[in-house]
Amino acid sequence: MSIDKDTAARVAKLARIRVEEDALPALAEEFNAILGFIEELNEVDVDGVEPMTSVTPMRLKRRVDEITDGDQQDKVLKNAPDAREGFFAVPKVVE
Amino acid sequence: MLDLSYDAPTPKTIAGAKDDWELVIGMEVHAQVSSNAKLFSGASTKFGAEPNSHVAFVDSAMPGMLPVINEFCIEQAVRTGLGLKAEINLKSAFDRKNYFYPDLPQGYQISQLYHPIVGEGEVLVEMGDGTARNVRVERIHLEQDAGKSIHDMDPNMSFVDLNRTGVALMEIVSRPDIRGPEEAAAYLGKLRQILRYLGTCDGNMQNGSMRADVNVSVCRPGQYEKYQATQDFGHLGTRCEIKNMNSMRFIQMAIDVEARRQIAILEDGGEIVQETRLYDADKNETRSMRSKEEAHDYRYFPDPDLLPLEIEQGWVDDIGATLPELPDAKKARFINDFKLSDYDASVLTAEVENANYFEAVAKGRDGKMSANWVINELFGRLKKDEKTITDSPVNPTQLGGIIELISSDAISGKIAKDLFEIVYTEGGDPAEIVEARGMKQVTDTGAIEAAVDQIIADNPAQVEKAKQNPKLAGWFVGQVMKATGGKANPKAVNELVAKKLAD
Image 1 (cartoon, each protein chain N blue to C red):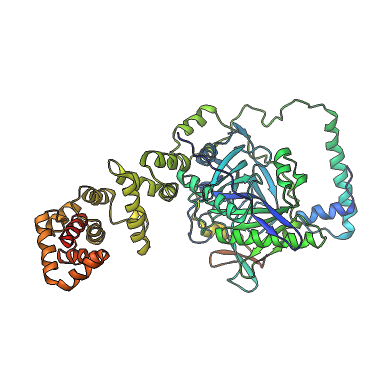
Image 2: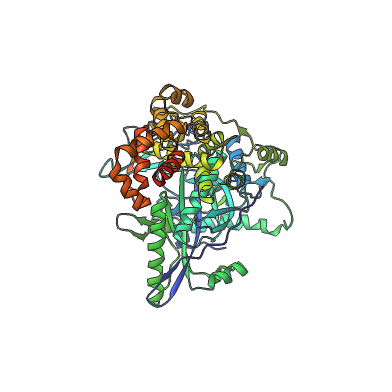
């Protein structure tokens, strides 16, 4: 798998990270290095092997259906660059 | 259980400029799970609160916060699956669906793409004309809802409320088995009915508890049958997805206008582009949501914060043992046990509260008569006051009492309606009211005879006319009823009037 400049630009856009045009070739290179490293794993034959999801036999932890959180509008909005009347205020996004 | 069998309805056909076209529709219904807390946090799911007051740091995606699944939401999904006669997957898993939008602070929605909790099921959709469509359900998966953006509070800004963020949704995905706008609305209605019976979703479409994405394509007659025979989508046309519909009426209009748009393109020699579209009710048109296309690269991958979800068959069986009687079974039983028409049984089973009320009235009484009184008198009266069955001023015992008074000939049908109005507005025991207010039907033929004689004696001219034309006897019956305050037994009056006029 090879990542070109366009693909790097696309990944950056999907992640909403601004990358200057002249930085894209280097970014594509880095992606390729990472993917190349991961591709080594393809050498292992995993046919019929179930994916391992945990190193210890653990069951997905569950919570009971009780209201134990919330009611903290001030804290939720504390880091918002702009908040008005209890809402996050963001640049207009409309379909 | 008695099974009701139906023929399949005729698919809707739209005549284009050149050919006839058929519609093929599949739906993805998002149903909000009825639960106290959210899917992965302890914040409340209650609708209509102060903005951002039902938000845990998990929901606002503060760094380091981890999701912990709400066990009851799993139970609700399993219950829904069992209610749709679907296969329950004892092992399922959560994936991240990545996209960027201000009302989704995580930057991804936790969903179940690869291993949903519920597999194939089915929904029987009655069309009300003796036909019904069996719509196959492909899968149901659990996922998080997004927040809500409000665009009209400021000219330059959108306002975001995260109260809904992280509330559990069930996405119920149908196969493309729906063949027209009416069927689509009926499918959604039936799904809503079943979920409400199960108590797994309140079905409130206005508040967005149920929303549907509708996939529409068109094909020439015959193509669909080829698809059904082979399950090969190649026989069908390219589909477009109309997003986020929460009105039965708009769903039907949107399907119709979208099908016509596609037909016009195809007959012009064009091609349909598979895309997401939005329905504009003001203009009655659908338009492309280009922004969605760009974001369509969801880069799904298994959520590393959540282990696979494993449930036990015993637990599923326990949930199955608590399932209520569902609409199809209840309707069949009403038709069978109470000798109701298909229509009456449908009306009475539409909401479980109505069905329970009817059963309480009909128990030990005449089923057909009970149905008539519940549907025509009670529902009619409640509708006039914009009330529902749960706040009916007349309880089943009272309505049953009225019906018993009619059955025992104690009161006439006409008086019964007056009595119903008294019980509705003033309350009280029907039998006591009848006794106290002298509403009992006069069955004493002596008294009726006296009244008949009186009317005949007072109206010699009418008597002459009636002797020429027996149809005029009705006038005498009316006069006698009036003279007795409507309490005379109409049958007795009829007989006596006929006899006296013949003398």
